[in-house]
Length: 259
Image 1 (tube, rainbow, N blue to C red):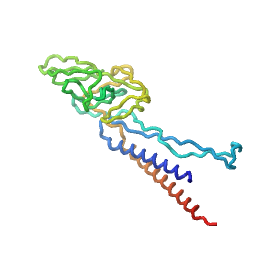
Image 2 (cartoon, rainbow, N blue to C red):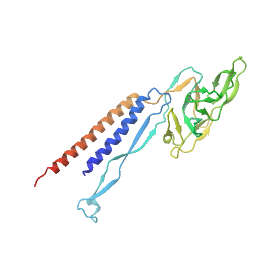
Image 3 (cartoon, rainbow, N blue to C red):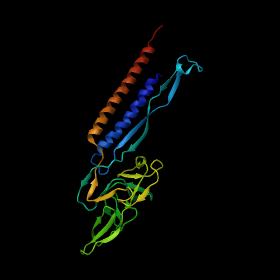
Image 4 (cartoon, rainbow, N blue to C red):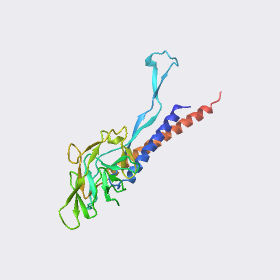
């Protein structure tokens, strides 16, 4: 088989994955705290060919031929999105580095960049999808609202108008390689070997980001950048398709040769 057929096929597969990532980015342009995905590519292994066909020919008579392109990884780009003012006291955004830690239904821990908070039926502070924050913070029923400071301190405002009560403190965690986190639904992530172990700390200290109540973090997808990337991926896909078409025509010419 002509190598260019296989090489062109790997190019089509790689650009299709690229277009898939770009389309998902565009679909989530208005999703709070969404982080754009990026596909990284790598060239496939090389085969060393000899012009003379012998194994003992000099190195200068040999040539290395690549076998196409492969997908190295699909990772998230954790650049901060713009803060969007909502004036909702249950909204909280992270300015800078860090994630909120939550308890997932299977008992493991997940990580989120914030968004809208809620109080569960058990009076525990949780993320928008109902995952309870870790460490847990209980909001008594006699509290009409909560206040979250930039350093993570949570105060409850009693319904009777008395002095605010400190309920606990939100912590943040960060990773050596956040791009290696495993993405889940609902803007949740899980730690793995690529991301490294989570390092916990207090907001606004030791390099951790601060919290902004009444704000949500917007998606970090830039429409112009994604549209340019989409056009480049489309052109690359077309060129690889032409390579396959040209290779097919060459094979057809070879098959039709007559002595």
